[in-house]
Length: 426
Image (cartoon, rainbow, N blue to C red):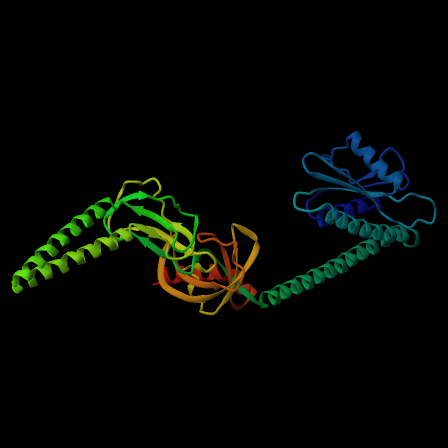
């Protein structure tokens, strides 16, 4: 086997050892004089004028050069350092490969390793050609080539295996770190109490200027009911009482004591009706029982409408006394307990964080976006809550204890998988 054929075999080995490599050839007008300073040029290789200039530029500058084709093919030309004692230039190794899955940095590292390996083989070949007979050149070159290949492959495999094991161990150790586990749930601000304002009797609305969302003070009139019929009925009762009083006095003067007692009872009954009319008239102006916000009710456009006794007209909530209602999904309710603390942020104040503590977990539930949620009451721990208003919504994050990081990441999938396995198990 000639030296030229051995060199071509080495280049083919370089091409096969590197991933996604289509061409590996060597260029050196000094080592390979003549019109064909190329070694290992396949018939399918595209020797364009642009590529030839690209390789010659790398040869003249003795620096690594890159070129990328539109089809994402990367061409890398780099010098094979031979450490010549004279001013002879180093040959250029050209490698073409597909860069779909690798970065430029990784490609450069791989090609530099190939160039270093090829340089050692060339040095062994040229030194052996000077000292040994031709029959020994092939044996020495092949031995050095196989030895270097085996050593390099084993070293790279050991490094990759060690790095992989270290990364896997580190990953599992990180997954076992216990961290505070917080569960996020939707929340809404409500008043500590909600004082209802109801209709005291059947009647009609005469005036109502208050609307939901307005602040009111204790004793402020919210609604006025029509009282004209009540006043007329009271006047009629007063007239009846006066008539009965006159009859009572006349009967008493005649000495008809039995009839006088009957009239006296009728007078008492009429006076009771008068007192009831007075009470209704006094309640025709309905006032707020507390100072606070009107959180429900708007009858300003219902003037003249009929209301029945007990109808809810308004709800009034305190100005600065609130509670937090957490809406906990059923899949998370098992983690929550009385006394747990958390933080919440409202959509109205996204930059303000409020501290809260769970007071009680109610068995009552409702439906939110197709999911069953349990209403849980919490209290605000901050003293200054003047910016809050009933009805504000946000998100609360409640700390439910220390859990491993890996468990936190897979908990929902683990719960879902267990349910599916139990559902379809025989």
